[in-house]
Each structure stands twice: as structure tokens, then as C-alpha cells.
Image 1 (cartoon, rainbow, N blue to C red):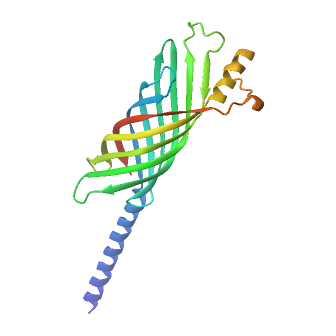
Image 2 (image 1 turned 90 degrees about the vertical axis):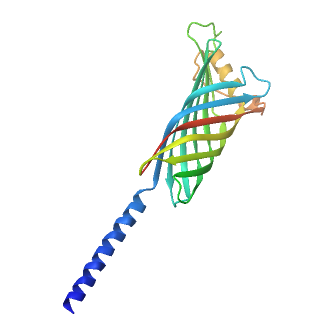
Image 3 (image 1 turned 180 degrees about the vertical axis):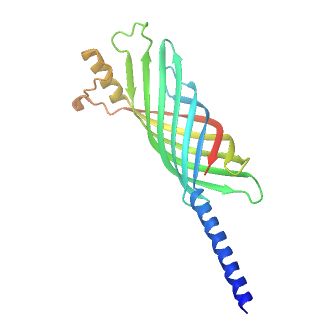
Length: 219
């Protein structure tokens, strides 16, 4: 009888430890961190130098509340030299994400809806004659919708061969014109003194597609 009780206690302890380890693993394996190459094509109607092809990089971190639902923060950087001017965008986006795992397969697909801002700037080359307006910046509200697929290659590493997103940006003409005016008046590209009474309320929409590929670390 004592042997049976001892075996029962030993099995109970083993099951308890095993369950605790599984719970700990489930609790800690919540993050996906991504980094990779990104190509973006942005279009603004009736504006030069658009459409424009941009190359850069993208990084993202996703916290998974469950196996299928999470929240993603993303940073993307693109640059391009156009006619002695450097065009640069830095996007900071955040939003919900969802993932579906195919049973018995290393492949999973995901989608997300992200919101945030993009720091967009045009900076003239120092050797160029920029007539006093050498740098113009704006910070449009940005939305990005899309998704992709991951292929698991080990316990913690996945390859992301494809992520495709559609994005749009609400660019304010007022902020650009105000900065040009401030630059011409003060000579400082960072001096912004917009006069609300002169606001035109005009906005243009930048939109486009971007393709990203890279690797994911899951922990």
C-alpha cells in the first residue's frame, strides 16, 4: 500500500512539474521580432517626383496575447536621391494582428491593420542651389493594411519570404507651405511658425504598396 501511495505521489509530482514547464513555456513564448529588407512604391496624384520607388528596411515586434491574436509595432525606413535631393521616410505604426497556423505544417499566415505617423522629408544636397529652402518635412497620419506568411525552420526562428501591405498617408499642404515660409523668413529649416489664419485646409493623399522579406525570432 505504501508503495502504491509513493508511486502515486511521484507521478503527481512529475505531472505537476511537467505542467508547470509547459505553462512557463507557453507564457514566455509570446514575442515575434522581425527584421528585413523592404521595397516601397509611393504615389501622389499630380505631384512630382511621384510615383517613386524606395528601398529600405523594416523592423517589427509582435506581442501575442493568444496563439492567434496579438498587437504589432512596426518601424520602416526608406531613402532615395532625386535630382540633388534626398527623400526620406520613417514610419512608426502600431495596431492589431492575427495569425493562422496550418495544422501539421511549418507555414503560418498573418494579417494586421496598423496606424501611426510617417516622418517625411526632402533635403537638398549641400552643393545644390536650394534658394533658401534646403529642407522640408511633414508628418502625415498613415495607415497600413496587409499580411504575409512565415515558415518555421526551428523552434525559435522563422523565415518570412513575403509580406505585402497597402498604405495611405494624409499629407497636409498647410504644414509644408508653412515650413517653406518659415525657412525663407528665418533661414532655419526647423523653424515652424504656421499662421492658422492663413491655413488653406488642403490635403493630398499618398498611397502605395510595399513588399518586405526577412527573418523572425520567436521567444
